[in-house]
Image 1 (spheres, rainbow, N blue to C red):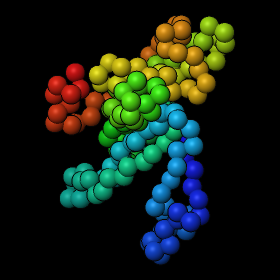
Image 2 (image 1 turned 135 degrees about the vertical axis):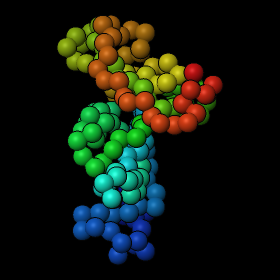
Image 3 (image 1 turned 90 degrees about the vertical axis):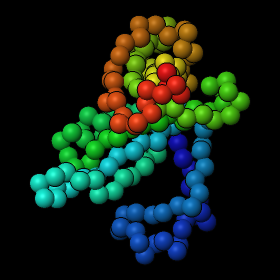
Image 4 (image 1 turned 180 degrees about the horizontal axis):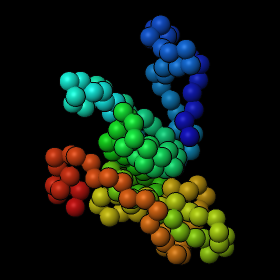
Length: 164
């Protein structure tokens, strides 16, 4: 979840905004939970070729938003390119925030709350992170099942050592 304050709003850029749009110079993370950075591209047909016109980077706290865009993008001129999970130090154990590309979403059950699915994101390194706020630890979850596997990004270095 992201917090905004009116004094962080960009007044200089206001004339460039659409009627329902605002630009913010600064946002605050309201909770120490994972969030996501999704990249999409907008394409247009130019001389019967699909050409990328521009890319957008979108921040969200909901893994369901990533899945929805990835699943719908093959039917539109908005193409899902990639999703990164940004993981706080209190979850990743690295001592600082880290960011990794998301490969898949799993769901599992909490032993004390069956039927209330807990979301888990798997990265290309094979690490899994619980993204449902207030859920128990990964080790205590039961009945893990794959819900969605993201298309493999077209990064040149996806198979490089940093993603294996």
